[in-house]
Length: 336
Image (cartoon, helix red, strand yellow):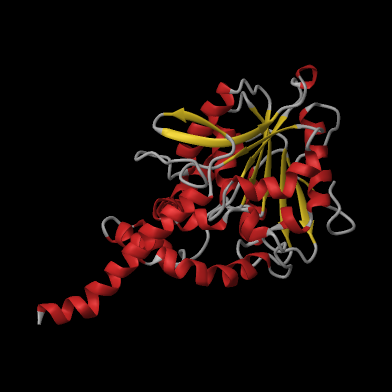
């Protein structure tokens, strides 16, 4: 009887575990860190820094924070070539994702991630940062603006998650975040199943646009499905709602020049909750709505975003003024 139970239940899980071990080793061999590493409070942050020549280093540095289920390569694909040589650029793997590790205490929450990133900005002697966060990365952007207002002089929120929303998150993120069951789930089912579900999930995230042909390879997608990374990603998603309920009450303190960007067809994050909330709470924000854009505007509307970011830089430098809570007027998709 015991043998029958093992063969029907235990054997498939053992096979999945062995499969995961083999695939993790293959992923580690195939993908190696190609940026720099910085350790702070038990977190190793992996990043790519592209500074301007020394004579231009007083200019603001654009700091890019990717969203959930991603890594720094996502933002690099969108912005590196468009902005290289025009501004200093810093692309960071948020804690637990890409090649960055996560600590046991606090790095799952936006303020914990912000604390580690603030230490990196100090290490790199970045005195004027404009932080550009996508989706979940926008919650960390806000936390970073609150934690280090002396260094973070501008904020850009792309398809942001910033306020409480109705409902919860997908069940598999909740399960993967649980104690005991979570690690078991991640070490048996994530890699075998994740690769099968990824194309459909990516279609939904980019809708109504299509993902770039080289997107999967460009972002090193298999890195996400390593058990430690998927669990860190799941914990960040599962704990996010409770974290931003408290964090959003402090947004009136974010008086830095800010840019809020969303697509009119975003079905992943509701602009009516998050963008409207930021425009209500931030005293110095501008809104850019992109007509017919989905949740990935940095890839599908890069030119418009680059123009808006350049304008934000000018606002931070005091070269261009804007009325508080100014919204895009006239033609939709035209930054103001």
